Amino acid sequence: LHFQTNNGTTATTEDEKYAKVNANSSTNNNPDFIPNHNHNYADQKDDNDADEYEVQNRLVAFVSKEAHYSFVKAMNIIGFHKRVNLVLIPTLLNGQMDVSQLERAIVRVYKEERKIPFFVGVTAGSTVRGSFDDIPSIVQVCHKLQQKFKLCHKIWIH
Image (cartoon, rainbow, N blue to C red; front, side, top):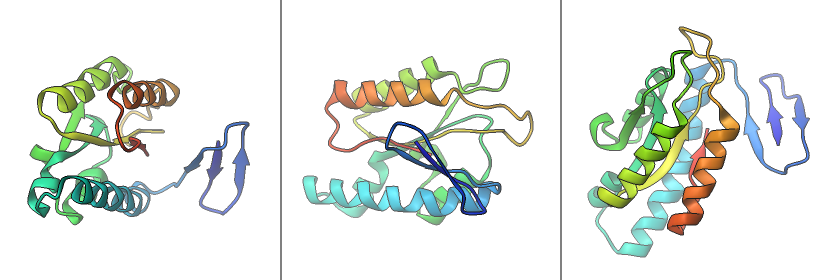
């Protein structure tokens, strides 16, 4: 896992995945949300021959109820509506995203609502509580569900 910090330094682990760590939530969340939306938006438009409004309404992002407001701001910038395209996941008493609730929400969105889970926003030091989500467990759940549902894309974890 590669972590890039604001000052450009990089830390690496054995795994060849990439993550960016930024001290400012707004500048971190807004630019990183848009490319993933655009990638999945294009895939769905090509695959289903659907109109833009239909495709836009099928993409769903997940963040904890304690997530920074900039996730909603980023969704507004790309034309998403928080009631249609965003699921707020309950947190545990310590402020961590409840991973079991995340898993249930992704399954519900995909199986019952026939929408596309494309993004999970995680918290690494929330603004109010300073809580950290259990990122390894969130990655495991997303990977498991991608395999189970044979999703044509990966769920972006930010």
